[in-house]
Image (cartoon, rainbow, N blue to C red):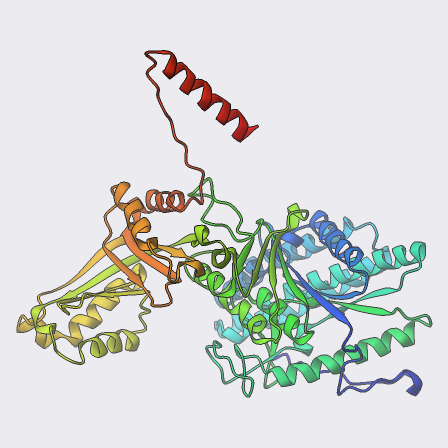
Length: 570
């Protein structure tokens, strides 16, 4: 089963007077767009859908002239719909069709229960949506029967099936927003419409780009064919606008979209997905296509945090983070935003700020990711945050035969590349006596075997004396644009680790001075993270002072300290 997506261009039932061209979208240069993306936890049930709808309406009230594109993930909660769908493909490949039936019934019940909890949607509309979901589920069952017969779990099948959750959640939210807008317009006289948008009609990725990470306006950016996407969006926007004008005599002045996240079409017209954190990426793509003034990602945390709050209780939200800082933090374990999400925002001119905000604490500003941060304006706060990479192994290649021998590093990292081993960190002293690199623990044994095979002759002749694995380790990274050309940052970082009696096994820093990384034992990583977080005054430091009173001077000192304490914390 292959699903081919085509961009509809039929214009029947639309009068010529209402027709608009499909080469350019109907909105003018003065139209202001905003993109708001809601993750799975933000649309986990009926209550969450209502909260998301209220947030969208609040944004419209704050800026009445804007048009909004809402991007939606599949329903989250426990269990997540996307996980359930992908699980059915795995079950079908093992011919466990009974498990498939149970899961499909659970998915249908989850969406039906959500719809039943949305009272503003009329019953006839609920029945229509349930019918669409039921039909899609039957289509999935047919696809999975083929998977079961062939006992073959193809990647294309997983992408097709895994993307249905976004189709359902976005249809539900579009209907909810549209009916609430209709009720509000009847009372207030405003004119606004929310239309469901299947992102596969707009977003096209390059089939040839198996690892989408490049940026090129001529070709693709992260696999996205931008020129094709712009033409598709213009055609779809004008088609939806014409449809609204035909259906409603007094058509609304603003047509807003509720678009599916995660899913896209390949350049061959086949349904595909955007991979990990694809819904965030979808929001960024739509942000660039609409030339949005802002992209807001609504999730279940207050923003980008200075450290993992589960390990550093005093971690706080960073109000302003640069794109570079956010990428560094994301790479080193921060789960708030994926680096690829920022690429479309950075490419657009002017660049588009990204806000990370909490659906469940919508009054809080959250974090803004943009061109600069507080670390560049306040030199006392040169570090914006700390992050860690866990499950790391250090591999040390050591020997006197490496000193002054050209090509050793090329052979070492060439064989690691051939073996599919990703190197996370590299450290080498100027003596060239040893090279130390870090990789994920799951790849450590493979890396050691590959290096031993490549340097078998040198090991036999004792030119290389040892290839050792040190595990388990963690990488502690300090990130901040303000660290550049600021003296004493490294000293404070390593002094904090030394004062905490933590041994550093390897370290690395690039010439951009945006990141300082140190490798420590995993058993000491939490203590290390808390120590450096406090050293840069990202946590409040508790100081206890004992005063032995022997005269009136001591009493006066205690009174002075007490007055200062009350003044500070009143």
